[in-house]
Amino acid sequence: MRELLRVAPVTDRLAGRFVDAGHDLYLVGGPVRDALLGRLPPDLDFATDAHPEQILELVSALGPTWTTGITFGTVGVQLTHDGVEHRCEITTYRSDAYASGSRKPSVTFGTTIEGDLSRRDFAANAMAIQLPLQAARPVIDPFGGLDDLAKRLLRTPGAPQQSFDDDPLRMLRAARFAAQLGFEVDAAALAAIREMASRLGIVSAERIRDELTKLLLAPDPRRGLELLVDTGLADYCLPELGRLKETVDEHRRHKDVYAHTLTVLEQAIGLEDGEPDLVLRLAALLHDIGKPKTKSVGPGGKVSFHHHEVVGAAMTRQRLTELRFPKDVVEDVSRLVELHLRFHGYAEGEWTDSAVRRYVRDAGHLLERLHKLTRSDCTTRNAAKARALSSAYDSLEQRIAELSELEDLRRLRPALDGNQIMTELKVPPGPIVGRAYRHLLQQRIEQGPMSHDEAVAALLAWAAEQPDWPGGD
Image (cartoon, rainbow, N blue to C red; front, side):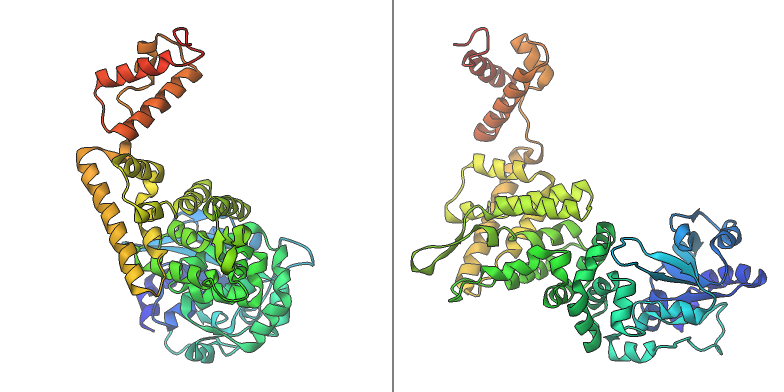
């Protein structure tokens, strides 16, 4: 009860208004589960017999409110206690279900807390605590959620086929909770997921994206991802992941890229600084998805995947776009996938300073993530090879640091900007200015810092060679 007592000033403040108005209020779902596990987060969920308009009227004086979910019976209010902001969402008792082929659940308001709990995804999430808190009040647990918490088990309150038919996203939540909580999914639910995986196809991309994001940011995403692949759910939300198993040839002369990918993900997580990094984790997960399309078997059974990073970057962009990830996430992850093999040219032979500059320039703001992804991509069991790759990357990072002391590698730009180029060439804005700027940037990368006069000389020499320049050929 310690966690519940900690948030009692918030829950009792809310409950007071509902009880005074003749309504019930319960803490429900994930917060009850997490409180019993000793890890209650600041965001809290509640259920009530009050209808949405009544909820809004009751909480509007307590703090900032939001009504984005009001059509589904949910009203939100933010309460602050001891400097901690609590996002509280209060929902009318309800029962949701998808019609066959529909991408939106129909919402029906209920009349009892037991009925509301019966529609929850798993028994461990189907518990409630009546408010205000009173020590004598037991946890409302009609489906054995307390026993499931003790067993670390995910089990649906009723028949799993009916539960997953009512809301197919619950199948994906099973994988997410496995990753977040380290729970096992019970045999009946697993069998139903395998049987009904295709039902996920009616769920909107946005809802699938949100669940996948939570899964990937969980403490153990590998557990959840393996469940997606093993049950066939991945075929309907992340099909590229399961297809990585196709990279193992019939003689098993090439490593299992699926297992390699999950190991890379775990190693990337180990290199994170503090908070989980969605972009890095997505890049680790997707970095080799181009391999099945580019796989070829040469003489002696040697397997190769030429240009899989380019193909993989295009596939990554398409998949993340279809899942409605934000544009910046799509672009950053795709770029990391495209660049993840660049380092191997360094490992095979030391680069010139211009090659190092180009590496930094191409990585841009993703350089630190690229460092982590590249290091994570080494999963060889050959200790000598692993040490050689690590040493080579240490060397590259040292080269970058040394050059950065002499030059601002993060802001590589020519000594002349666009206005100065127009002045020196005596031309108005137009395509030739951009071409000239790119030429000077290439010179900067190849030769290092240039003085103003050196840049002007290089610009005029370039202009004289241009067929469409008045002084050119």
